[in-house]
Picture 1: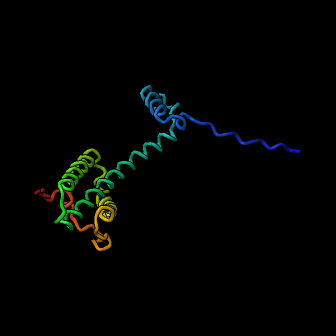
Picture 2: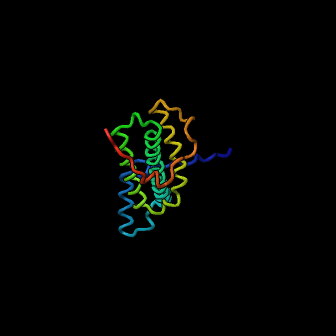
Picture 3: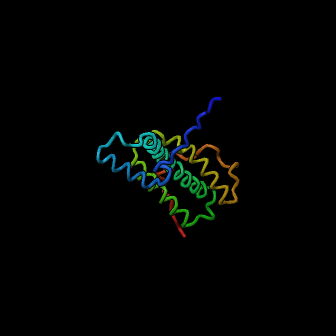
Amino acid sequence: MEHSATPPMPTTTLYDQDFYAWTQHQVDLLRSRRWEDLDIENLVEEIESLGKQQRQELRNRLGVLLGHLLKWHYQPEVRSKSWFYTIKEQRQEIQRHLKENPSLKPYLSEAIEIGYQKGLNLVGQETPLDPTHLPQVCPFSETEIFTEPVDWQP
């Protein structure tokens, strides 16, 4: 009678046990140039994830900005100081983000498309407007999105 070997149990790594400690250990290994000891598989995954987070931040900020521009445009009678400053802040943060990550600029038009859908959802959540009755494609040019003056008057 053959005895079948039990498959080895997966070992828990520092990456699984304490992510922060893992990052600090990887930094130490990199600084000391101990390439052979690096956790390459997880490092690659984490670096790739960082790039995706930059794209996600751009899309999310555009969603908030475009949602507020829609509210501003389609509900002029209820414009608020809060909307004004949200538009201003998101414009500044998106510009900063693009300055710090210039390689995202070719992705901007796609991010605007995705962000616009998020903006429609925001309008649906925060206003009595029906997003299905609004343009389903972003009606704002890049110039309007990023530089069109929005004046706040109480």
